[in-house]
Picture (cartoon, rainbow, N blue to C red):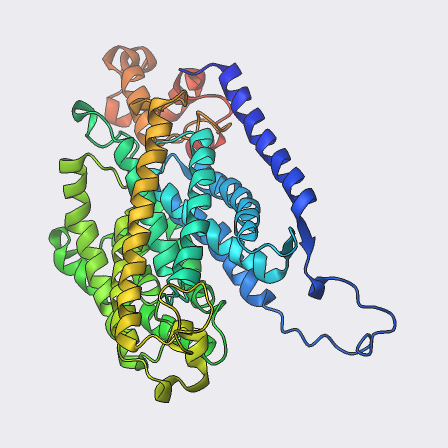
Length: 502
């Protein structure tokens, strides 16, 4: 068991990191011109601001990150505080770090410009370590999550820059750069932190309760409702509306498919709440990279059907296989919700890129596939230059996902090795999936615990002593006996059970 001093030192490190961020913001970050006051003598000083704010979509993404992701991970019956609390902590940390890391790659005159678009980008980046956290949920300390987030966001920012600005791939909804990266980085870390062979069985608290599953369903609902904003916020022109339409249709198709496939493959042909909580969202991931393309309604629905099917089958068959054979405990099943649907999206992007023409996309081709416009003689950082044909663009789409997987898995393995073999404290098996190690929690309200304690108290001798009138046990009034022995049964401050007895 770790000492209180070790806990305190860990939180001191967190504060030091925040202070370092403060210094970096002070030295390098400045408001963008659109966020500064206008000059008094400016011609348009009194006119309305023509800048179209994306604040409504920013709010939607905030809800997804801080509420959707947080509540989706509350399915563990004893880990609700950590699921929601650490989501808030990590997102707040990563948003700041992402502004800095992405800003360093796009500096002007040695300064980072800060605008609403930068914060939206940073919010989207916050999804990356949260996805990875899902693969490790309940098996890491806050300091390990901090370390993982710092390394991961740095690698994510570099990979995103290469994918979007060097390879010039299309990835409007971030399925390649966000979902695939976060999923496979987290899985690689989980592989490095996997348990020994003799401890591979599921933990005693690695499961849901009826109530915790309901809370997790709240997260699912928020993510489902706001996912079109997540995919469309970075789209330009009419591509923004297409992104909303395609995402909604894909989510709807994935949801229907999830219910059907879940009933077909689950025990006794009953619906599995794990599938409903997660696989219904797979359509939003699978359509992400291509959401602003000319898919047609049928294309979006087809992608949703494929994603829902693959995700449910992954939860039903692949996840148990990975646990049994690789000792890889993917707690939230991020491989099925984010990983495989992101691969589907990457493949779809190659297919649709191979069919893209100027006649179809008109003036928007430059926004969606920048490298397909211009000539190879143009001075540019884009790999291979401009003027790509559709087949080459399709190849770069596949190259982009391949490099993303390589960086994510390689970076995850290195990060996992650091967390495992350095001075970081690793949780023991009996410490997994419990809030009480890092949170002040109320007295236990587990029904089984009370039944076990009652069984110890209410043996034959206790009944005989309590039943002074020699009544039969069936007719004995247990309530006065339980109240007299209350302090021996449960903590005095547990109002939940006290109310039940009264």
